[in-house]
Length: 117
Image (cartoon, rainbow, N blue to C red; front, top):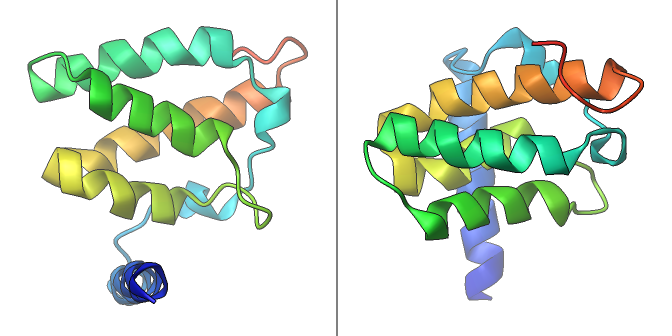
């Protein structure tokens, strides 16, 4: 029951942030993570988190990667990812997730799964 309450709390936060238009419009686009080369994305995720946080945080980096690689049946949800990372990154979670989602969208459209950027 604790897990159910936790998920419901996250969904409530997402609904509240949605009402306030706190999520970027590109979150509406879906990402098929199978089309993305995670071998390229993992080092970028690690370096970007380290750059934003000002220190290396292996636990946070691994958490972010697991959220992308262990996809629920409903698919990747950038809003849920942002809410989950906020506990670690606070105000930096929004900009990080927005940037990450743009790269993932670009990567899935690439024939080799690498973002154009």
